[in-house]
Every structure is written in structure tokens, then in C-alpha cells.
Image (cartoon, rainbow, N blue to C red; front, side):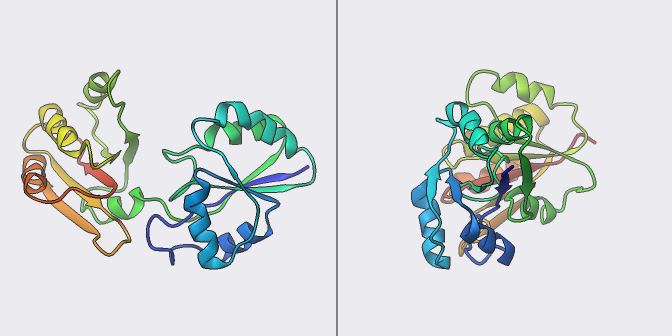
Length: 223
């Protein structure tokens, strides 16, 4: 019986990868990648020559069961996303489930995940939190926000630069003008930035500054 190994990759700085992850990627019979062009840059940097195959949200429903069937033989496949840990707002769940259904062993290495450094340096409670990832873009967005109005735990969201202003405005309408928050972008990169304050204060900042990079928004729970 084969094995599927989930391998976290850097979210920006290429040095943020473990020695174990590099070894696994070099030894794998096949590496499944969200975008092979992105992963190729990592491979070139660390002189990894393993075979790459695309596995992403557009083909995972069709490919998961086939890949799991392959792994019933004595093979080892690794899986990476473009950045961070596969399965955290990235493809992985369906393949992991298919492998477990087939009796294939699944292993997940520890490593980079964008929300952890953003949460830790937010200054908001970390003892209990909920990870919401990306909110629905249209259908179900308001319903999801409404369901979080009474949430007392610290909330963690991902957002693209194109929707940050809209999202902050909706958070103000949902959680109120006094709610504390922290917004981090470009984590681990040269222009890494974190802005702390109330939601209106953070919105005002980003209305005046360049919005670039992937964002992690941490919002305090209801007091």
C-alpha cells in the first residue's frame, strides 16, 4: 500500500521550508501541485527533480479517486499547494478522503500556514479562535456574516486585495465600529505589514495606502 504525504511550502520567503519537506519532495514518486509553474520555482531553488502533476480545484473531483487508486500500490505521492499547507483554503480534502476510503496512509508534515503568524502577532486572544478562510464572494456571504455576529472567539479570515475594502466595510456593518482587528499582508516577504486597531481605523488606513498581496484579517470576538 502506498502513502500520500501533505507537504507545506513557503508562503513567501523560500527559506521557510523544513529539511524534511525538501527530502520528501525529492524522494516522492510524484508530486501533486496546485500550479506546476509556481512549484517549479521552488523545485529549481532547491534542486528538486521529482515529477510534477497538476492537482487543483478544477480537476480534484475527477482526479481524487484515480490518484487514490494509484496509491493502493507501493508508491509515495507528495502534495503541495502554491503556498502554505494544502487543505487550508486550498485543495486537499477530497484527495485525503479518497485515500483514507481506499485504506491509503496519509501523512501531513508541519510547516507554513499564513494565518498562524498573523494570529499570533495580532494582539488578540489566541487561546480560542475560529478559522473562516475566504468568505463566499456572493451567494451566502451575508448569511455567513450574520451567523458570526455573536461569535465570541477570535475570527480568522483570508481575503484577496481586490475585496479588502468591501470586506472591511461589511465587517464594520456586522461587528460594529468599536471592534478590534488586525490585518496582515505580504507575510514573510520584504514588504510584510500588519495594521492593528478598530475596524474603521484599519479601513481608513487602507483607503489611503496601496493594497497589494494576500491578506489575513483577524477580528476580535464579541465581548
